[in-house]
Image (cartoon, rainbow, N blue to C red; front, side, top):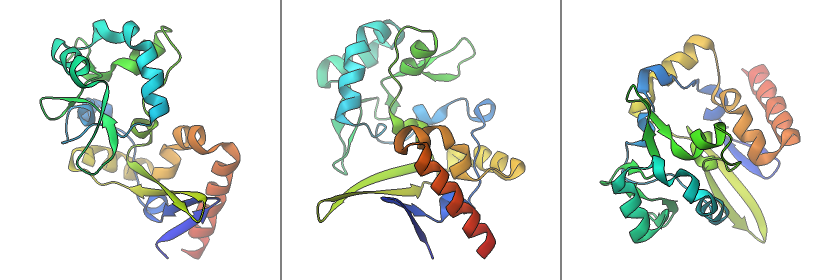
Length: 197
């Protein structure tokens, strides 16, 4: 049994069995600057971020502002997905840095400072889960898969140390996306899996 269905969401068994807990002190937010494409983003998120762009533009690098001026805050990648624009083939345009050289998201930092109420793309908050949306016979289904990335090995080690499964680490963004009742059903499914052992 590799897939568990919870409501209209197909969940890979890995989100229950694998352990994960971000270790920011070790990685320093490198997921914002590594990779060959931006973060998946929805059209609604694009519109919301465009509205608050004037509030965060000064936090972005000159190169990022040039990219945004040229192609906007998002583009279609090689897989046909809408993703955040990137600088130099890898850095998310919203990457900024603190005084210690740690990567931060300009959208999230400004939100935490009370400048606006727009969240960063949900795909960023949900990592290491990747979400796919399907339409089958008029019904919308989602697929949740666990994404393995070598730069997150410290997060995996920390997750195993703290016995924190992926789904539990991501309780807040999963609840944000699918709602508290759905998350309660997910926890019930996790308990059933544990009993089947």
